[in-house]
Image 1 (cartoon, rainbow, N blue to C red):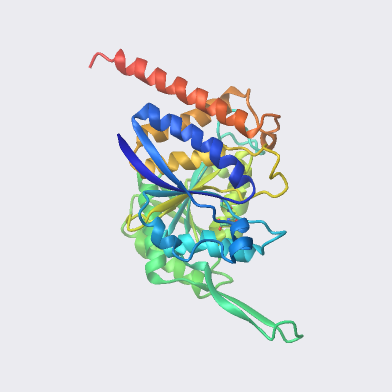
Image 2: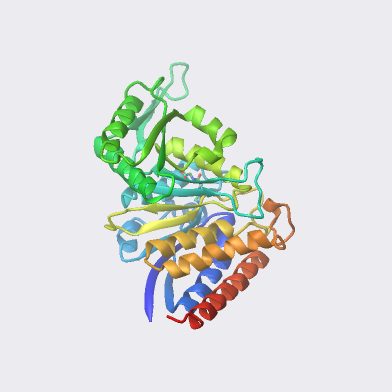
Length: 366
Ligand code: GGG
């Protein structure tokens, strides 16, 4: 039986609570589709940091190279470990170490979960640059603690980095019916980096005459996501802009318990990493009430990346069925069901969807 090797990093807070149940849904779908997943669990995160002085082992990136994909929960325990240590030394270390330069985040309303807006039509994908920009990590603190203190955080935009993320976004826009690309800029204030970004967008755009490119200042784009979400198709944004816009996207979807994210090395030189967009949510951690839907959506993206479209489709259809059904709702969606109950509902829908697809193929005269 085909077996994929998956590095499982539940991480912190609700990451530890959603990954087990989400993995149960994924394993069930894999079995239905005739393959299996062989997980190795890595205990990296803030507990590990407090015990060992590092967020993950020194040879972590070397060891995980042998895996087909990484499946990550959440990172952060701000009461015990500064957020900039936990995020940089785990999540960002993996993204940058494996040159996962695309962070793909669908923003789509599921029928049955209306979201806060009147508009019923929200179906966009954000392509976030994931290897440089504002997250490059360049800068420093000088004269710390004095009245003359200086802090710098330098954003880095390379031609290679900007060209490749824009090209990926144009390709994605080309593959979608509306063929529209919204580029997030701020060239009126950032006269070097963002003017460069805009110039490269126009250059690459010449290779894609069938795609309509529109540049929006990121603040105006954030407003447009609320006032005219139906006009947006593919969005391309720098690392920080993309992070902010996609949290807004999650809110538009009705809950941060829903959106998922794929950190991709499109050339497959290194394993890619799949995660819910949400963080460790210390406010609800330990209660068993976190929504596993985002982790299951991330699993669907992982299956797509591994070339298992049937499994990806069943996982997504199960999410849609539970959303549409309206019976099972975790607290973030206004309900009282817990993490396990939501995962059980997703498993049950996945089984039904698989059985229905077998009935259809059995009755197909071809
Ligand atoms: N699910 C991964 C996680 O914990 N994300 C929290 C976070 O703050 N992410 C920032 C980012 O994606 O750049």
